[in-house]
Image (cartoon, rainbow, N blue to C red; front, side):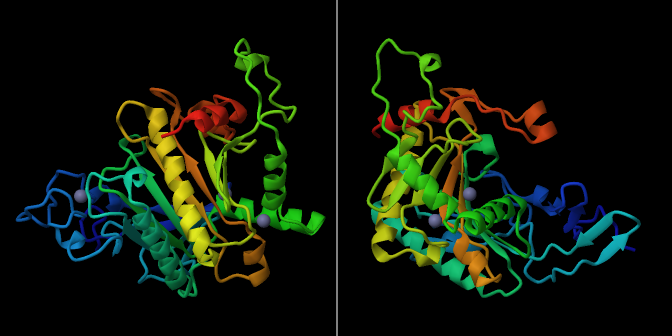
Length: 360
Ligand SMILES: [Zn+2]
Ligand SMILES: [Zn+2]
Ligand SMILES: [Zn+2]
């Protein structure tokens, strides 16, 4: 008889939510993962405080950027994504097949994305490409999600600069919505939704500030205000017209392509530059000497589906920060959690100007 409370009992699994028609990951073992500075229960003799630093086994060796398996993974590549049990009228579960990796950005514990050398970020983008290519070969994976959680406000317990890659055997709900929007727009207009949005955003003239003017006097819906935060030859960074978060920034390539492996050499360089500028602007906005907490979500095309579906997706990177202004944290509350409708604390045009004017 397996005791559910025993350390050896792996009750990680997916469960199907029949109302929202989506899989939920249950990962009870993740509660055992360490916090920085605390000793691992299974490694009482260790001498390091950060497992990703060069003096620890995982961080050792010669490297600029490094990929590691996630030792406290919520997904397991040794399982199979087969719906195992349908019990009664609604209980549907499946083994938590998938893969979680950690990507170390630097050997320097105190570095952060905004302080990395350009060549370090270039190496990071190349490692993301390499991992995307490798993970895509796992034929049961449907989505490869490259991301970074940064800062204690969003629950990142490890300050060593790093990101993660989650590989899923299904298409996560937010990605599926985006993919369906691209598909539907393409079928109706024979064009790409994000290519068209980019064209329109580049045509919006920047607002000429009148010192007497206040935000509430502006007509932000009449297309006279730019939502561009910064740009270079190949990429545009904007706070989208439809941002969910006050300082949500999307980095979008000006050329239509679907995933990170399609970047040309010059685009690897320009993407490295614009990502660093965006993060440095966030850090400058935070303005108390601390790094700005954020989530970086890279939206690549689906994998192992129909080629046409994959090609219709327009690659982009989304950043969300829980800050809605200096020192003010945004909490998801009744309306957001209870209905799924976001209440955003500022118009994108207004905050885009604040971000555009910051020159870190
Ligand atoms: Zn470290
Ligand atoms: Zn496009
Ligand atoms: Zn997206």
